[in-house]
Length: 360
Ligand code: NAD
Ligand code: GLY
Image 1 (cartoon, rainbow, N blue to C red):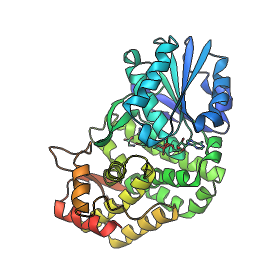
Image 2: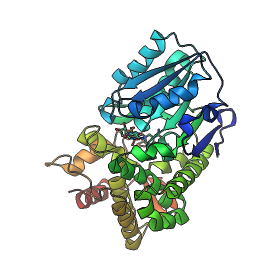
Image 3: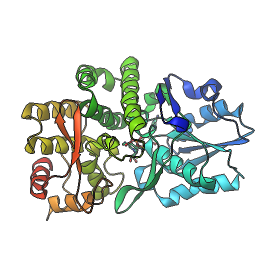
Image 4: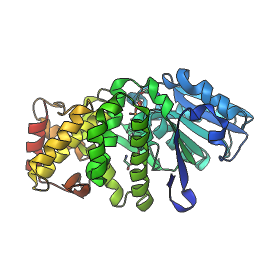
């Protein structure tokens, strides 16, 4: 499968034990050196395998190990990548390899976009969330205390290598978080996929290999189709942010790392479908159907209370920093029919009602 973006097109390979094989990386241009960027959880599990696979192709393969966690998606951590690149004399042909979840992937991509004004990089995602979403499409970023993913760049990888065997070691909570980004593709684009998810949720939670392979493949197909039409989110691509406006507010409001990104998206999709319903765009049965799927995936149905005095006000304040906001007006990804999304504003009073109804 490919993401088709003219001269920036690239392949997404999905398979078993890919990180152990030199063959998986045989099409990437060879430079003198490669830098594997990982973290202190994923590194001990998989860095030796990837470094081994790359060693036949590069004279030097370096590795930098970042601290784990969303709270480390910062300038300070990003600098560790630049330190490693400079200390090891890496040049413009050095290829960066992001080995980890979305946090490592987003930071490595941003470092690649900036180092010497741009060096090549490869995504090697090891979480379900990263395999179905963040490794594809070239959004790279770090967080700012005032807003999620606010500092970043669009910068496409050369290749995405999704090794499904790495999902064996993923904690169950992280698997559920990844399922949030899988579920979103149904309501925004593909109701047949939503039907399939309803019948396959138990298999996915049990890590059935065929079920996971199909979920990753179909998610990547939908994402590649969207990104291929709107790389820089001038319109259509915003639908991939279904549930994210509320979700990002939860992540920032709770402090990065307290709620997993996928958990925020899970509760956020419930809030967004509720808002769609209150705007008359979908019926109550649809709301219930999505709630049931989110719950079965092991995700929260309610958002947290961010401010006991004025919870809705705090959500609204945080959501005004969202990248989709225009002139301070929040724009939501809403569902306006089966498999169809629309991006639009909603009256503050209605949004307040939804937040009051959906937070515990
Ligand atoms: P993450 O990168 O923090 O990974 C989750 C946890 O799992 C971490 O503790 C990590 O060390 C660990 N882990 C990773 N792979 C493992 C494995 N195979 N076995 C055991 N543990 C493993 O979180 P995530 O959910 O992968 O990604 C979330 C991030 O992705 C957020 O920062 C979000 O903003 C970003 N994101 C970006 C995009 C995009 O388009 N660029 C899309 C969605 C999300
Ligand atoms: N995850 C949203 C996007 O890539 O646009």
